Image (cartoon, rainbow, N blue to C red):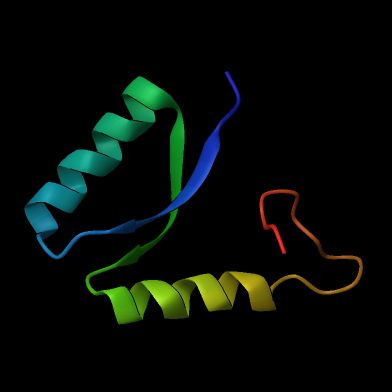
Length: 63
C-alpha cells in the first residue's frame, strides 16, 4: 500500500494523538505536520511548498 502524506488539523491534543496512531495503523498515513487552526494549517502547507526547490522536489508536493 502506498503511504499517504498529510497535514493533520485538529485542535484537541487527545484526538490528534489517537488519530495519528489510528491513521498510521489502518490507512498507512504519515502525518508530516500538525495544526490546531486553519491558519496554522495554511502556514504548514506553505512551509512544505517552500521546501520544494530545484533539485529538492518531493513527489508528494503538488503545484
